[in-house]
Length: 353
Image (tube, rainbow, N blue to C red; front, side, top):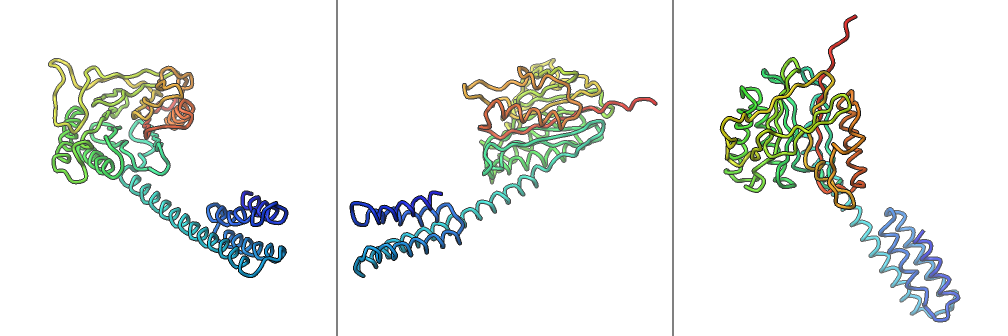
């Protein structure tokens, strides 16, 4: 539309304008607009059309050969520049698409989708990047069946980009390994703490600023009855049951993983919180992309105040989807941080015939 408007206006001004060459700038602008907005072949056609119009107008106005060649040179030079810009934009688009595909492959390799079910639990997860061009972030989650029950983690590494991915890789790798052997959830947290601290001390791609990770570790017993939680400086999870949403704040605040400071809980206070998980209840774990999401007035999002979250959810997929959409409505789609959500629902026992 802009290309056609520029060419038509340039022709009219050149034919009927009070001054000679009045329409030449607009005639030359047509190829430039085409080069920036149209596919390459279409831009070539516009450049050829603009050159033809330039020659035709000069012949119509009976201008000498020298001005005709000068006008043609101006339009042709700008047209060549427009085609070069078009080729550059196309190459940058291909490079960006390749980079995004590679970033997504790295993200999926480091942070694969969890299984749809584990032990007595149905599982769902969601990851929303703050920017479509930056799919690599520091949020992480994992679910794993172990001899001690179903164990899971959700966390947030400080930092972005490749350094955050390296720290995520260490955290997920340590969780996969230690979740099979750590006898208690408190021991698992301590071993993850040590693994993150060692990785930061060695340097390399993980610096001291990306070396610590806020996280919630959870364990559901094999029969699904008991839910154990260890919160290492992370936003607390929520328990959704019978249309009620309850925040599970830690009894004793603890420092993030990777800081090399363990066992800071006051004496006599257990580092693990244990609650019952009724049949049909869901555990909802989130990162600060949810709890620090803000509306246009700067008010933080709170799932406990949302009417959309205070209803029954029979499957964790529905819970993850509802929360994702609710945060999107709250922010108007303008999230400033990556958002990871992990939900598990205890399956109800089959009804007796």
